Image 1 (cartoon, rainbow, N blue to C red):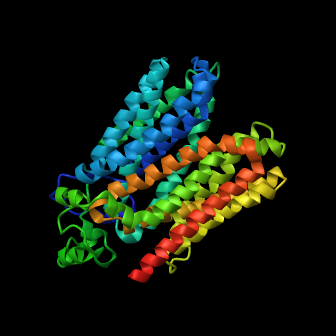
Image 2 (cartoon, rainbow, N blue to C red):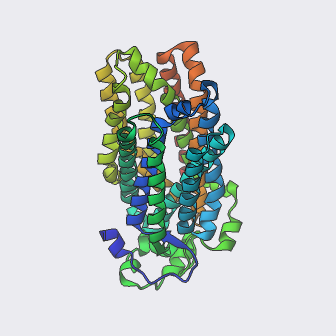
Image 3 (tube, helix red, strand yellow):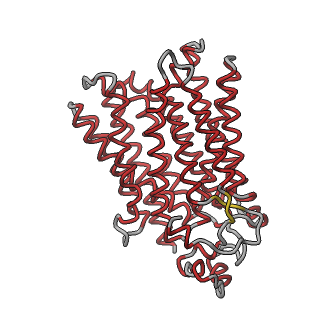
Length: 434
């Protein structure tokens, strides 16, 4: 048991809401990301082998973005009302059954719908996992634990395509079964990882020690002063508090985060289409293209757990904003380089910046979100990510044909920088008002 889990052993809260143990959350995260990225690595060849016409591939692929976005918007509220554990088990179950349908039925409309529900179920599970970290750990631990969460998830994203590659021997038919096995394993782990959600007042920096002593005296007043749930209630599980928190309240609270997420997700949606043609223009052989992602992912795996140590005395919104802006600037570096190895070096720097930005962004959401709507806040942010990424992917091909690879890099980078400036101005205005 980790030190954080050892500290978080209060008596079960008198609430019907349940979170997920940290060890269970990390295990399920690894399996979900391995399944997701393993599927992405093989889905286009698999669909072609199943008789799907080339012109219809987009019909199936766009279901991924829509399924994830719709699921995050819908299930965020359910997480707040019914608890993260129930949402996690439900999401894993839906994803598992839909993945089975995707494999077993070759009729295109059914495959499209099944893929929508598969990605939607995984999105619901991911939303539940992020929420449970916000509920089950003290606020001072959020950056460190979200760093571990991001590291474990990225490790799964590396392992998934490697494992799928090992089972692709005489065609692609066996590859999607890896995703089914991973999703089934995630479902089993989620069933076994239930734990009582930690009361809201124990998550606040000023009263964290109550988790160690069991003494909640003064905790209720501290929670009320901060606008969170009273002692003995799990944050985000009081039905009246959930009902009183509107979507507008969520948008007002985490609007700058959504602006940042949208800017970077759109850029990376463009990258998803742009990266292969870009490396080919630089003279890269085809095997280098998938392996180049390792250069970006390895720094994320290794450095994400240490994101909390970056400028610890600097406002976190400022750190996140500067790092996100630098990610946009790197797009201009890609546009002017003529060496494949320099492009790989730039991608390593990109991975270092992502290792800082992603965990700190998650932690910012837990800090800024209404206490009774943490799940919905993660859902809205994740939906923005999915929709923006889908938009970037949809327009990338048109932009490349119109202006070329270097032009599209510059356009995507400028969009990311402008979105970052908007978010930081928004945060500055909020801080001035306070």
